[in-house]
Structure formats: C-alpha cells, structure tokens
Image 1 (tube, helix red, strand yellow):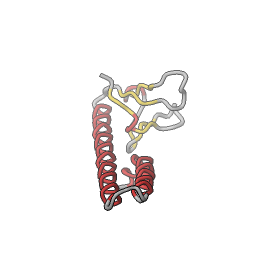
Image 2: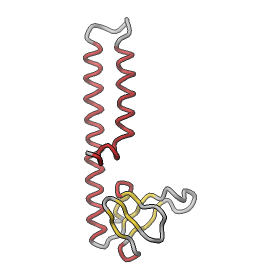
Image 3: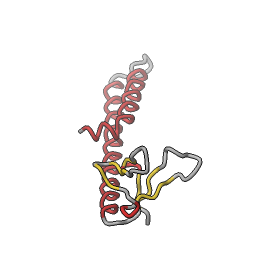
Amino acid sequence: MEKFFYIEGAYLILAAIVLLITLFVTTRPFMGKGAVKKGMGAVALFMALAIGAHYWVTMSRMAEVKKAFEAGKTVLCENRVIRKGAQFLAVRKSLGWRLEGDNFVNDNYVRPFFAARCIVEE
C-alpha cells in the first residue's frame, strides 16, 4: 500500500481537489435535485478508475523493466539531474548498475533512478 501512495499520491490530491470543486458546483442553487449525489458519484468513480488504471499500467511497466534489466537488456531511465544534456540514461548490469528494491543504483551516480520512470530499450 505504501508503494501505491508513493506513486499515486499527487493524483490522489488532485482527485480530492476535483471532488471539492464538484461539490461546490453541484450545491449551487441553479443545480437540480440530486445533483450532488449524481455528480460526486460520477466524478469519484471516474477518478478511482483513472487512478487505478494508472497504477496498474505503472506497476506492469515496472515489472517489465525489472525483468528486462535482470535479463541483461538496456533500460532507459529519465534523467532529471541534467535536463539540458541527455534526457535519458542507459542502465545496464554490465555498466555497474544494480537493482535495489524499485531503484536502479550505481556507485558513480549520487541519486538512484526509480524503475517507474524507466522503459526497456527496443
């Protein structure tokens, strides 16, 4: 569950804001009876499905990236340290990278690279 909140935390906050906006709009005098119940239900259902789908896709991609890395394939990770240079960093076991939990770690780099921000090079 900790991983879910780590990956989807920002989206959960945005969903709460959208629900508050929905609550505000549906309680206005010009809205019909039952608008709060219908509006909140529809928006909450949509947000739950969207966040759940995003989590499932992210976890599937992470599993694929980890499997490919263990098989010796090249993994491309988003490089947030140097934005003006290479936007992606090639991660391979043969280059001294190792997988610690969900992070790719190398002694030559200060920070780890989270597997959710990586893709398998084709």
